Length: 252
Image (cartoon, rainbow, N blue to C red; front, side, top):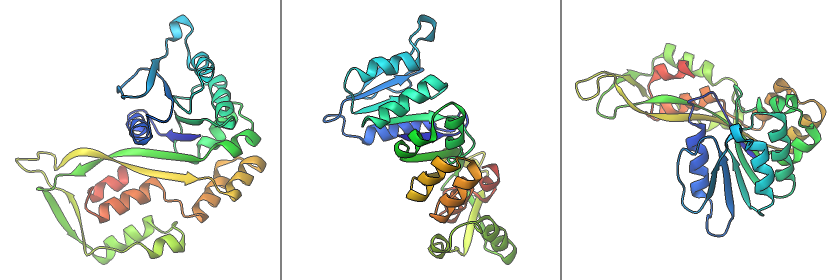
């Protein structure tokens, strides 16, 4: 199971569809349950849930499992019944993609446990959890340079202080970064949006933590040791490569 998490409007559905687009839709039987169907994807059997007539995510998931799918996309896990059925589907060899409302990627573990999913079932099924937010991207023709002063470097160093030494050694500070600069062609100095991500991949240590002590702080410590970056750290890296402005870091 792969789960995406974030608030409403953070781009989870778009990321989910991008993942579906990258899968082999000719060899795999891919079925989706959505509310509503937001994009039409060729090669996928898409179905819209209708709670008013009893066709909920849970009931739809039961029907889908009888159709021998390889991959199942569930628009959102909202309740205990859907969560348990999604876990059962993942346990029996299906790839399950879905979304969940939590503040962070690591937060999916305690949220699912709170919903009634047994940790010993969650540990072997969750492969990857992804948290995301959207930030404004800079207009290429209209952005203001900011030299990397000592005080600015100190601020950015502070944002990156939680990164593991191995990951930190690969990060190079640029000589300059950018911030939005309004212009006649780009009134706000920004155009379009990009996602900043954090993701943790399950390791043996994390699997043991899920079974023995599935609390967010415990799992976060182990994920960070494994090199996980937070969304804010990903935002800093996007500032370094000139994709977003310095001010966007503090909106994440």
